[in-house]
Amino acid sequence: MKIAIVAGCNRRNSSSTMMAKFVGERLKSAGHVVNIWDLYDEPLPFYDPDDETESDTVTRLAQMVAEADAVVLSTPEYHGSVSGVLKNALDYLGSEHFDGKMVLCISSAGGSVGVSSLQHMQVIVRNLHGISCPEWISIGGDQRRFDEQGEPAHAAVRARVDRVLMTFVSLAGKMRIT
Image 1 (cartoon, one colour):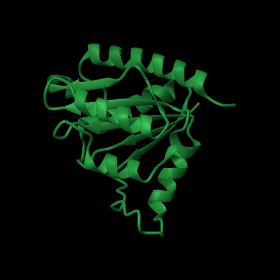
Image 2 (image 1 turned 60 degrees about the horizontal axis):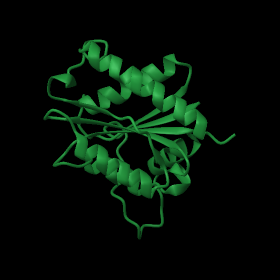
Image 3 (image 1 turned 30 degrees about the horizontal axis):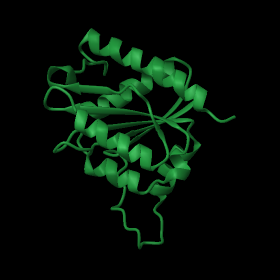
Image 4 (image 1 turned 90 degrees about the vertical axis):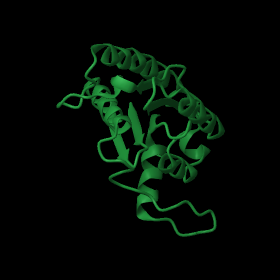
């Protein structure tokens, strides 16, 4: 299965991006083709619905998501919602990119968990005609620590990620149009 991951933080070494990369490695090790778009490394211009030109970066992101069988969205929780850079990226995309695809949402929060950002992503996914995975990944507080290999420092977090990914991959496979 082809899976697109959009890491929606504009901060170097953010825990939400580290989690997105960890998820990507787990999915690759399970035999999936994974493409990650890190909005810190490849930022997009501000969305302007009146601008008829499309930048190369926007075209490549749109193509990556359109060609995917499933999508993972990752964000830090800022002021109880998704990051501005993730929302900006999603503004460039539409139902033609998400229609009928399973979407896994990930958040990282300074507090205990980032539930508000996850709920906001589910609303966005629904409006893009994607299908939100009933499981999600939220890390907060001390759970945001990663080791030198880029893995969550807590075994319980790694185990939770593996359980969520099993559900996500199973559902995404059932939704996949052949």
